[in-house]
Image 1: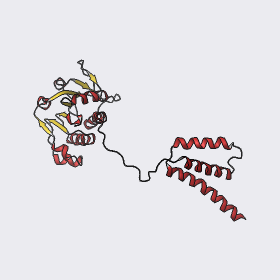
Image 2: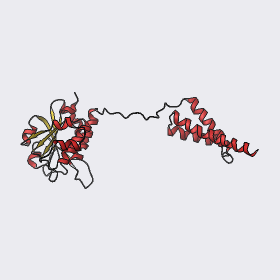
Image 3: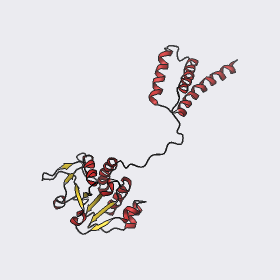
Length: 248
């Protein structure tokens, strides 16, 4: 079982259903499944799923609590999120630093990511129930949308857990890398093409072709792309030949 299964997101008195919906989408994207709401604003679960499509499983698991203590009761580690440093000397961390710590503790029990209200954040008595205060590095403009803040830490946890399971399909024109003889045929035709248009008139052919070879090597074309480059050179040669025959 992934350590992400023991990570819960806790919202203390959220005020906007849109942020709840945005967070549900983020959690589905990043492999988190448990959202706990303490005294939330009234919302319609159907509307939440309407904003965050394909998230019925996460929406169905949302839990409501009357107090923060109840929401955190089964958690062994709580990370509170705040946009600025507090007066008390709390242990401070960032999402990137927090991720490996939270994942390690999640193998032992539930870990809570605690977020406050959209306008005022977490009160001190809520932060008192956490073990660490996490801040997200930003510019001087440190105010983040609630769902955006969840995304930052969820992304770090997702990568740290090694659960990134989606792979992008290969391009429909994917081709293998060119073999050595394909390279040499392409370069030979490019050489012939440059000679045919008198490109070497004031240039050293060996130096030019070495530069062309270097350029193509850095570009790293696949077999189809290199064949396309070769076809361009061949078409130049054929065009020159047609023009010469037309003048005869």
